[in-house]
Length: 310
Image (cartoon, one colour):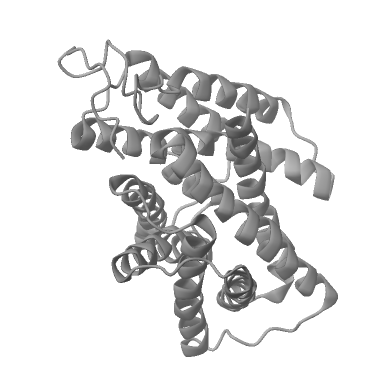
């Protein structure tokens, strides 16, 4: 039941970031919004770590969590915001990033020997269709800008797989603090170099920053890290199928933008996709990408618990 709560919290909080991006549009400086969002989040997390006196982090873990931060925060968000500034449609970005669960499952199949059942492949395809239905017609594209959502896809996928490859030795709060501090330094340097650091801090912009720091930054990424550790990379990635339709519900609540029949259908399809694709638990080991079942694609071999390592 606790895992279900973290999964639901992750979907809701991760989706809130897209609403926050809309709220922050009056700032007219995506680089500045990202920079100050991460500076504020880093300050809060660093203070929390100092107050709670967490155990020291090893040098190796520090480097690894810095890498996770660069992938999950800088590359992922940098690609999303950069694609938007290059005129790539939000629908295109969402669709490219929606390939992430498929990519993570395939890497798990070949790198860790996870079983990949036919219903999981079908479920992943249904999830992709749900995202396409949810985002509607926003599929504008702009040349080389299309590489940016691909970078986002690879960044978030790489972070999930890096977390799986070796169990972290530090607690969640410390790891998240390292990730955010490193990302804040990168975003701050980029905003300063491009002249986007100054913000007109109106009440609406300040409210948007608070929303992004608390819900999306602290909430969304904490839930992401916890879900990676409790559910595994494949299950966590599958939950991303639910974020576009849930974002539609956020927009309905925040901006009175009522969902149409397509959006309601997308929400139902996304739920079906997650159920179909959800890997079976491993027998006698940590849960990961369907590590305990049969009928996988590619050779039809039977794997009982293979690839349950993290």
